[in-house]
Length: 261
Ligand code: 9D3
Image (cartoon, rainbow, N blue to C red; front, side, top):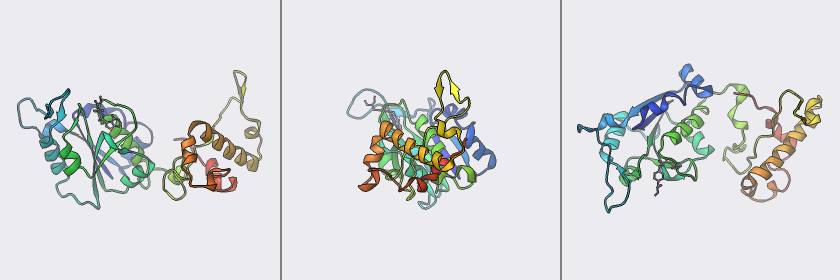
């Protein structure tokens, strides 16, 4: 799968993809990331990509011409079944795990990084297939957001994660693949030493009773979800949130099967 990133800061992407799962995916050839400099599609001496907003106001706006020219030359024969053009902007729909999974299914995804005060609205209306934001906070541009989207989607490209780290059984993935309804957070993890500065690892994890460990992990995951992300439990339609979303602890042995990346 190919990710294209269209940006005025191509150097920004020297770092983010050189580590962990994404770096491995790149090495394996299953994923390719191509960074494109928007200024390569300007024609004036100053390589102008922005202009003042019609109607007045502070800040500058990304001009449509270089963006349309760039997208049309990067994906010259756009096929909606195989290609997806995504605008990253603060006005976009909130990006979540189902979007990562969906985007991982395309052959090529082109991410347009917004900058300045915004992007000419015709890019959203007539060039991008969708417009995404990564959260309710103000970033200075779409580059960090594009890196987030690439990371989240690239690891879901078939073959990237080993069997051990199968993506089905993750926090934020429900069995239905819907993303949130039955999703709860991962359970807390501990490693050696068994006592650190007086803080002991729960005894049950030190023994070998795997039925007890499974029960403890399930309960601890549920408690942590209640404390940190009650919204995930509120999202469950009815009975499921009362005690055991997703059913019994027995059905929740995904909690056991996490592996380090
Ligand atoms: C006056 C309102 N502006 C903020 C001072 C609006 C604004 C313009 C440009 C807010 C952010 C940006 C730049 N942000 C992005 O391009 C962006 C973004 C974000 O800010 N938050 C979450 N996700 C994303 S994706 C792209």
